[in-house]
Image (cartoon, rainbow, N blue to C red; front, side, top):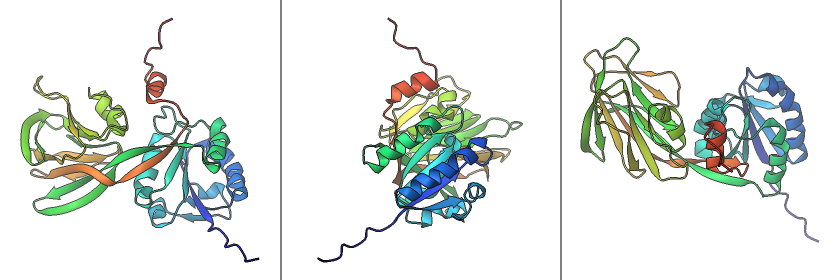
Amino acid sequence: MANQQASPQKTAAIISRPDRAEVAQIVPGLLRWLNEHGYKVVTDLETSRHAAGQEAIPRSEMGSRPLDLVIVLGGDGTLLSAARVTAAVDVPLLGVNLGSLGFLTEVPPQSLYTMLDAIAEGRAAIEHRSLMQCDLLRGDEVRGRYLVFNDAVVNKTALARLNTYDLYIDKVFVSSYRADGMIVAAPTGSTAYSFSAGGPVLMPTVGALVVTPVAPHSLTHRPLVVPDSAEIEILLRSEEEVAYLSLDGQPGLDLSDGDRVRCRRSEHQVDLFRTGSDFFQVLRSKLKWGERQA
């Protein structure tokens, strides 16, 4: 009888928020489960102190590894970080909510092993989320290229005057905005800063992007929804040359007068394991929308 070829070993990554006490409680049992189910494990450096004997690498290097599963222990910010660094390897993420809001990390710790068993048995639902690629241009030079899951925000500092932002869609001029800032949000990010600034809620699977002005000087300037096939460009015109580009809520990059931020849908996407809760149930739970009246 011919020898059967052994199946290749699977690799799982664990990424965590280091200041959560629950991480130390969860990781040992999680490592046992992964070992029993044939996974090699690699952790980020933040998790390594709870995972003695496991290979640990900087989070930024996760995208260079062939991964089959990424388990994120933390809040939505931790999952956003994990999504950006692993997007290029097309690996599904399981977000375990150790934070407060949990739009993305919807699995509570007590349901972790139920979800892992569903993943092992091929029963777990996966939802595909789009990413944006945002480029920072100064003149003809591309100063940076970034993958963005939630939003890109061009904003003034607390003490600066209103800036002027020229908006272009597919290189066609739309309008000039005098405002505190401008937000370009992916569907997933429509419930983040854009929502706080008065933008619409998009279902996360909608093929669209949202442009939301922050405190615009003109009352006629309203959020704009465009297809995700569009290229969005924001030109900064700042007399004081004081503005910042923030990506997924990370510390800002300095901008100068004449800089352009160009966003479009990325060729990469993020695959999230979901518990089966529908989007509107999540909104009712997280945003305290009203339940149906009897």
